[in-house]
Length: 110
Image 1 (cartoon, rainbow, N blue to C red):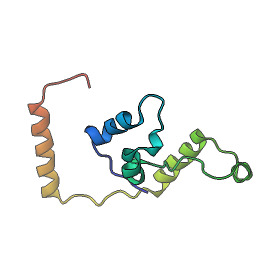
Image 2: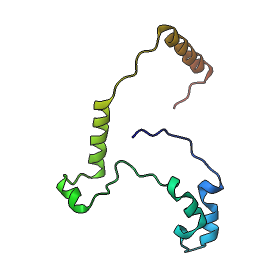
Image 3: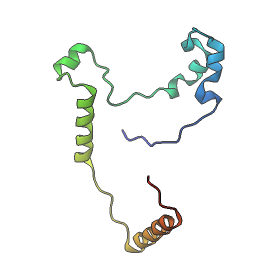
Image 4: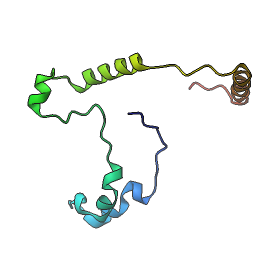
């Protein structure tokens, strides 16, 4: 269930500029070639979205998204296993690299 975060791609395809032109004002964007070409990869279904029927949702506690999110983070915290420690030479080298980077960067409020 783990997803890696990636940067935001900004290009004509990602912005859907061809769909705006093809559909026009008040048009149907679902029928454009851009939508058809990108439909499978452009949609993201959150693990917190509720897709069960109202009856199933009611029978299983009627949890809203905030309650589901609260349960999910608690479960993730309970399931967490810390990584093994780094070997001391690697740890010292990594710490030296971080210290050098911090020293080279000016202080900022963020």
